[in-house]
Structures are given as structure tokens and as C-alpha cells.
Image 1 (tube, rainbow, N blue to C red):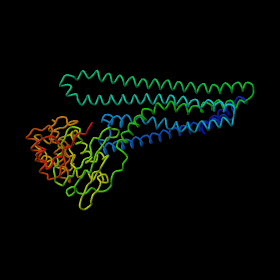
Image 2 (image 1 turned 120 degrees about the vertical axis):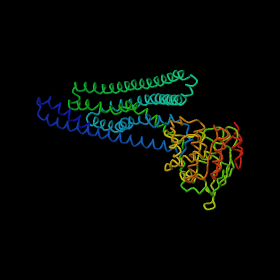
Image 3 (image 1 turned 120 degrees about the horizontal axis):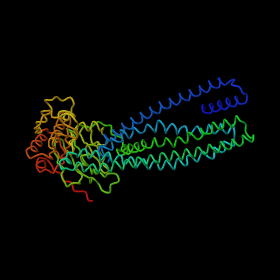
Image 4 (image 1 turned 90 degrees about the horizontal axis):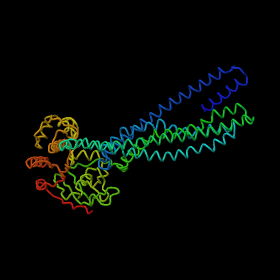
Amino acid sequence: MLVIGQAWLLSRSVVGVFETRSTDGLWTAGALLLAVFAARGLLAWLQSVLAHRASAAVKSQLRREVMAARLRRPTGDRASASTLVTVVTSGLDDLDGYFSKYLPQLALALVVPFLVGGAILWADWQSALIVAFTLPLIPVFMALVGWTTAKATARRFAVLDRLANHFADLVEGLPTLQAFGRARAQAKGVAITEDANRRETMRVLYVSFLSAFVLELLATLSVAVVAVTVGFRLVFGHVDFTTALFVLILAPDAFLPVRQVGVHYHDSADGVAAADAAFAIIDAAGDEPDGTLPAPNLATSRVRFEGAGFTHPGADRASLEPLDLTLHPGEMVALSGASGAGKTTALRLLMGFEQPTVGRLVVESDEAGALDRGSLDPASWREQLAFVPQLPGLVPGSVADNVRLAAPEAGIDEVEQVLTEVGADFSAHQTVGDDGEGLSAGQLRRVALARALLRLRRGARLLVLDEPTAGLDADSEATVLEAVRATGAGALIVTHRPAALALADRVVELEAVAR
């Protein structure tokens, strides 16, 4: 409405000067125009503020949902840590262009052409007819350009993600590469991936500049058609000067919002690609609601696998064939079998990282009866579990800091005691770097086991261990197994080691899944 008022004021004041040969009333028109400019500036500022607030809110929500999805099902999606970092940092930051430029412009494109077209129709129906025929050409070309841009941007994001993963893998394996004298040879691989990223980025820029040129040319020609016809009709007296000038001033604003949508689409494409990747991570966690029932006390409850099996979505074979197994309180059960039999998958089902695709897990107690594990609140369930995965996670800090992840309030004496119980021959104050840097594989596993023992002291009732003695010598293995047995807690252990199998109350052999 301000644009229409601006065109009306300009046309009236300019024509008035020419017709009256006087500047009387020009100051009034100038003051009104300044008011219109100020109002348009205020609205533009308000639009920018609201758009950036919306962008910040959506980015924050998406980041929370991505992290919640990853924490809810840490094994559910195939996205690597590098992909996750790329998506939640620079990837989602590109949504600023979508919310601050593209989305507001799209709203303007849906409203402004109709209002401006209506004003032109009221002033001169012939010019409105030209606008009505030429305006739809811009969205058609914009759609064609948009498909090309979306494909180019998706390819660029994929290449960027591959570069991030390649670089992260290279940094992680750098000590090994350096030890074997292959570190410098990896520079060529990084250069190749970087060149691919550069090419895809330039391809997106080429498409962006060419599409902007096409849209600008189309809009310019459309406005030119209106200007030429109005000019000829003005010369032959078929339209008055005021109407002609009003239409000429207003015509570009009929095409501008639609044209700007195509221009700003490129600002949003990177953010949309990252958002799609974020939605893929969120969707991979599934939309099944978590249970709400409090978990029974596992010190007096039995956990049963009743034909529980699991198949990854889209996989042609099961990761775990239907398993029947009962875990009694205080019983140590060992899972054994060939690689690929589904031992780790069984632990994931027990932890609640995955839900059985066939069968179910049941927690049975005398007080609460038989409850499906999926109906239990995940937090209350995992509070009673002490989990040591195949590759334990450590954070930068000290050994004590990593053990205290199980109980932040634990004192240094208690930390040193659990480290002694697992046979640790290193100080609780020893520094730990990223991914356990500074510790050997055996030391890293001892820290994880000490953390599990500390959890048992804080109320956990069931140990869930995946290859707990891998990387340990026979004496250290015996010390660790004795510490596990001394807790008196139930345990489900995945292991191939004879000593661990011999110490278990029961050994369950899983058959390899047929390929």
C-alpha cells in the first residue's frame, strides 16, 4: 500500500509541476513522500528483526531436536559425527538466508503483485492486461532455475559433508599414518576432495548468477513492453500524462517481488539442504513416543527377551534373529557367537537404543508384573544400567573427570578406589585428550569399567558390557572379571574370551545370521 501511495504522490506532484509551471504544493508532497519512505524503512527494519528472530528460534529448535534424536537413538542413524557437526553448526546457520530474505520475499510475492496489479487495472486496464500476461512467465522460469539450483546445492552439500568426514578421519588416524610414514601422502586425497568442493561451489555460483540474469532480463523486457505501449498511447493522446506516469512508476514493483524470490532462493538453498539433512537425522530416530512408566527395581526383577529380533530399515536381512533369553537378578550371562550374530544388537535392544522389530523385551517383577520395556521411561530405565560399549567414549580432561561422568559428586578417594578395583596402574589425575588420547586401549577400557562400577555404587543394578576385557592381558582380565563378579549385580556380557566365558553363570551362543 505504501508503494502504491508513493507512486501516486510522485505522479501527481511531477505532473502538477509540468502543468502549472509552479512548485506550489511541492513541499507538501515532499513531506508526504518522506513519511512514506520513513514508513517503508521502519517496516523493512521490523521485517528484518522478526525474520532473524524466527531464524534463531527455528535453528535452536532444530539443533535441540537433532541432538535429542541422536541421544534418544545413538545407533539409529548412519550420520557420522562429522556430518552431525557440519549440520548443526555452519549448515543450519545458512537458514538465516531462508528466513531473513527468501521467506519474507515469498510472502511479498504472493501479495504485492495483486495489489499493484489492481492499482494498475484501476488506472489503465490495457497496461494491466500486459502485466497479467507477462508476470506469470517469471515464476515459470524461476521454477526451472530453482530445480537446477536445488540439485547443484544438494551436490555441493554432499561434497562438503564428504570433505568434513575425510578430514575428520584423517585427523583421527594421523598418529598411525605418521608412524607408517604415510601422513604426507594423504595431502593429495584432501586436495582432490577440496577441489571437488570448490568445483561444486563454483557451479552453484554459476547457476545463481545466470539465473539472476535470466530473471532480471525477463522482468526488464516485461516492464519495457509496458513502457513502450504506454509511451505510444501517450503520444497519440489515448492516455493522460498522470495515468501514464503512475503506471510507469508502478509497473516495475509488480515484477520486483516475484523476481526477488528467484534471487533470494539461492540465499536459502544451502540452509534448506542442511535442514533436509537435519530432518533425516531426526526421522532416523523414529517418531515412536517414549514410555512413561517408572522402571521396576532390577535388583528383584527379571528381564526377558521374548522372540526379540531386529532388522534395520531397508536391510535385506536381520541384524538379530528372534532371541529368547531371561536375565535373573544377580546372574552373569555371557553372549557369544560369530561376528555378525547380533550380540551388540541385543545389547542395544536392552539399552533401549533400538526397539525390537519382532518380539519384545519384558521386565517382570512381583510388584509391577510384566511390563513391556518400551512402555518404561527411558531415563528411569537407564538409571539402573551401567553400560560399557565396545568403544568407550571419553572427554578431554583427567581420568578422574571421565570416571566421574557416572557420578559427578564422587570424591577423588572413591574414584581411586574403583580404579584400583579394575587394576588400573595409572593416576586418576592423568590427562586425557580427545577420544582417549594419552591412554592405551587397555587403559581406556579400565577407565570405562571403573565408571561402570561407580554407577553401580549410585544405584545401577545391571551391567551391560560389550567386550569388557578386550586389549587386556590375562592378569588384568582376571582382575577386571573378579571386580565385576564382586559387585553382585546382574550382568550381560558380550565376549569371546575363554576366561570371561568360564566365569559366567550361563553362556548363550548366538547363531550367525544367514546372509
